[in-house]
Image (tube, rainbow, N blue to C red):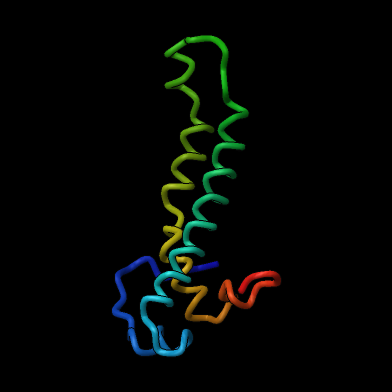
Length: 106
């Protein structure tokens, strides 16, 4: 999912239009999606790094593990979850519901 990594000016009216003109709701939707993406990304990274977990406290071994360093660098280069969530929101790839629309909620 390629996202534009540079700073981009967004038309807040267009963002707000998807939530009936409320920019605060639009930001809340994008923030919730960014949190989901962040949690998923962190879980993936932790899972990959757990393969390198060592019970031995050998500092030389920790600093020399190139594969672990490359995995970390890969995740550092990825677009930020907030950038991805904005792109998904603009491209209509995010779905949301209001609590009042959920079954059993009044």
